[in-house]
Figure 1 (cartoon, one colour):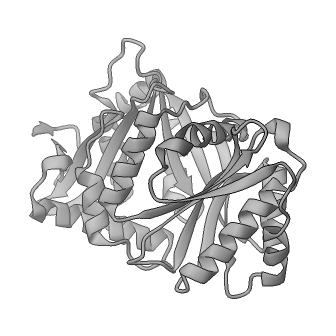
Figure 2 (cartoon, rainbow, N blue to C red; figure 1 turned 180 degrees about the vertical axis):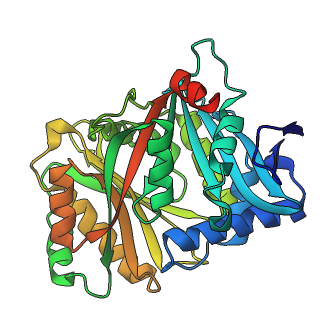
Length: 349
């Protein structure tokens, strides 16, 4: 552990390898996570403790996380985690998450954690940009991002649909579209080796999504990174379903939609990425995949209450199809960015 001294009186910030932390400390990290999750989304049940601990302990050769924890005595009151993606895409960006217990805000603790988190980052050009996420449900996060000088890069609408009220007749209609020349492949869990090239090609369509003001490169997907994501997901106790649309003429994967969920808390289904290759748009592939997926969720996860997703506010086509399904705005989120050089200037004040 390395103790940092530039912190508010009565507090201590330490760099801690949370991956190998003892159970007592992990219990405190989980408790803080539950507290802040409840602040942001009080209607959701708590995330399973075992899943959070598995995520905290996980290591991957495709990413690195450095944690600093803030204490008042033995009480954990804050955390900053800084991630670097090491999959070959956007390795110049560091994702920063800052958590401060609500009872300990407005004392300079967030700024001290921010400074501690970015202090180890190299200034040789390999780390150029910091990125972080805020929610309109937690105004304190927005105020902090503005205070450090970060700029909004992507404005995201978080939406959800109530499955008890969804138009099932419409979903049946969409599920039966069956566009000529295409077939659907449903994948429960790990992607079979025979479908991996199609899955990678389909997932690459996500790079067509609006980035608005984000300074971000295209993401690349490989079998190695896909297998690592699958391993991490299973470690956390989560399941995933992937629906691929295949071009029968070429065998290429040209569209996908995916969900993730945890059967321990199945009330909310996370609708992840959904995209279609530009050359295959306008053929109702989106309705087809989404209708099939909704029917499967209703049939096989009866405890599910909501499907929740987020989309760029400028992604009019995706918002339109989601609105037609019954998705409604729940809150908004923003992805912020700030050059590392500017962030270090703020931290040195």
